[in-house]
Length: 102
Image (cartoon, rainbow, N blue to C red; front, side, top):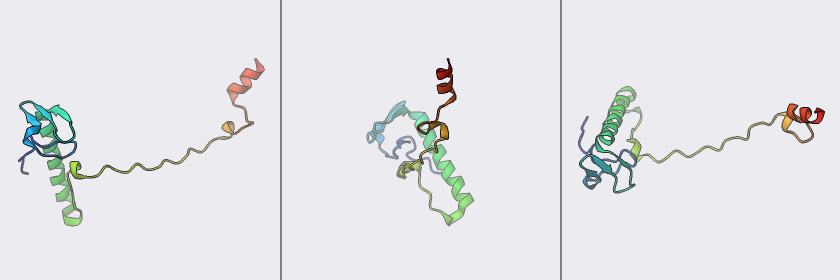
């Protein structure tokens, strides 16, 4: 695993630039992500390690890319939750009945 540029790479967007690193501060010149520089670099090293392990497990069957280079996942539309009979017009809930009785 080559740690080259891990301290200059943004862990969020994947942009590499020496200008993003200022001693202990990391401020990405591309996306303005701010972090402690060593933490940002550690996350990049962790990502490289995970990719390395995944490639050993999967072999050449899949292409792997660092997270910063992937497009965000498209949100799936959620289905409308099925409503029970209590919420249908004309049906009373227990609370409605209690209000009517009291």
